[in-house]
Length: 236
Ligand code: OAD
Image 1 (tube, protein in one colour):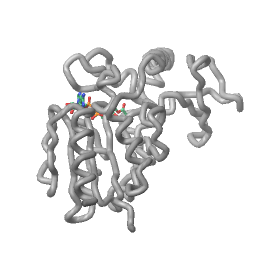
Image 2 (cartoon, rainbow, N blue to C red; image 1 turned 135 degrees about the horizontal axis):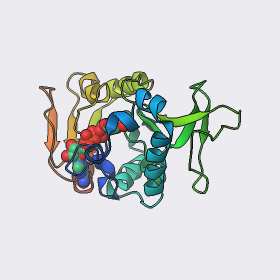
Image 3 (tube, rainbow, N blue to C red; image 1 turned 45 degrees about the vertical axis):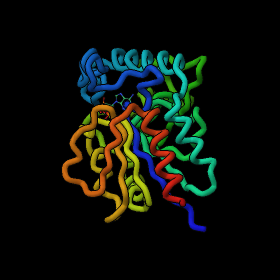
């Protein structure tokens, strides 16, 4: 029997119940930090120490939190042989992976990785006991390094495979994103005609006339429980 291909596209809201701050909610990260100073190429060039310290702080926080029920329910679906599950995420945390998801495509980079400023393909993984970076820290190849993060106004290399995954989905599920940042926000428009889309978010954004969207106005954990029931009912 053909597996049902379920493609998730997650944003900061999927990690909110783990205690990771979202960006644009009240008291979100971008309310408390000067976004263009800490998350743009210009900001990095002007004050690399500030940018390194911003991401060091994010890493410290990430190491204190654990995946929540929503991450776990997604990973559990992957264990069910009737489903072919893929995860696209805008998040730079590794909570999907720590919950057990094996196929995670990060659109905006990964917090626990750094890359060479001279060669974007040279990437190193940081460890829990050695994750602090500074402008002076060099990679094992001697290069100065930067966070492995897609800064504002930089290209999003993984958008091409993400669009392909969205186009192949039998069911497309969006969780916890304000749909404010492109190209990620446009993935809903890449699904094939007639494909059901579910959007789980307690405060959903406008989906701008995309067809077949069912909004589940819930927190990620509650919404995921409802979605699992819906998926099971689709299998009959
Ligand atoms: P935002 O902070 O813009 O949006 C968070 C969304 O999560 C909102 O729609 C909230 O309603 C929702 N939300 C809050 N709590 C939730 C919960 N418990 N369960 C489910 N949803 C919840 O975050 P993103 O849309 O992910 O990029 O932001 C996109 C990008 O903007 C980020 O990847 C980041 C940022 O600038 C980079 O840093 C490159």
